[in-house]
Length: 441
Image (cartoon, rainbow, N blue to C red; front, side, top):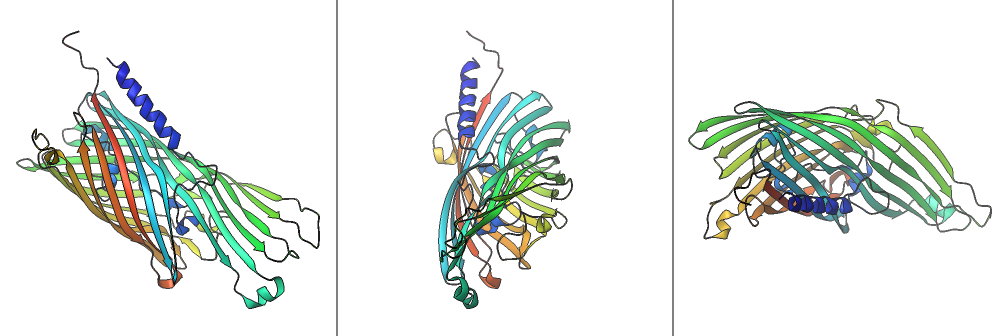
């Protein structure tokens, strides 16, 4: 009986690992943004397509039909014999503007893969993989200083970066008493980031120079969460949720390299110069994070939720450590990151046997984010709207979630780059009841 179910899960896991960016080692861009050149790159929005279509909320979400990765305590809300698997992907489209210059880019990436299963009646677990941060950019510009050009002729300056940090996680939650649950999560973050800077000289009398950093990084951290659900009236309840993620020391090695090309003056090939530095414990840290959420639930029909999260990166060391800070011409400073998120979901009639559209779950949300860095002293803020639906598939709670995220980050003021984006999220949720004794053979 179970063999067919295991085969389906193993197939889904195999497909997930085929596309998961486990610390990309080549120049494929898992994400693309000029702002990812700073620090550890763009920190990914954690959660499945289900979370993302509700504005990124989930700290106070209790939904027995979907895996909620934003609070470890949420795993206890389930049918006691249910097994769930979630596979989510994201396709991003970005449009950039700075002054009178414009460009665009698109990417495709896995946003999460996770499975959840019960251990005993009050205890359940989950395990999975998700991107933690991504670096992806390539920017070229000609030197415009007339004094420099008069001496060396034209110079093309190109900065490029790629790579990812991946989060492997395992967590568990337990119902302490009716309505109150707690949970914990263990996270291992690992991957490779590559950043380089190249000066290409038009004149053969001068050497072109390429220099940069390759960073092999890893860190151990954890997260704790709680949720408390209180009845508010007939078929209505309120859920209070909170999470706390631990600060983590970033370990690994930073390889700095410098390569010069042959010039017409000196035909000898200069030897590449490389320098290796191990990150001292505590020199660079990943900030901890506090999150709070409040949700209202209307039985099994509707949910509305608001989340707030905050993390302090000012003492992370990112802005004064080689490889993380000295990229590009702008001044990068680690700062306070915070976000406000709100979302809702509603299903007209989950058990309607006549009209399929009434069994569809409709979702929407909005958010405001402040990034963990300042550029030239300016905060880097983003805001957006999300919309989505979950289409029931076959039976039980199997579903296909389709979502869209439309927003903007940065602006044209202060020589920043305005980044507008349209992101599409797709998630497949596999839900099944295991270990039931059959009545008939």
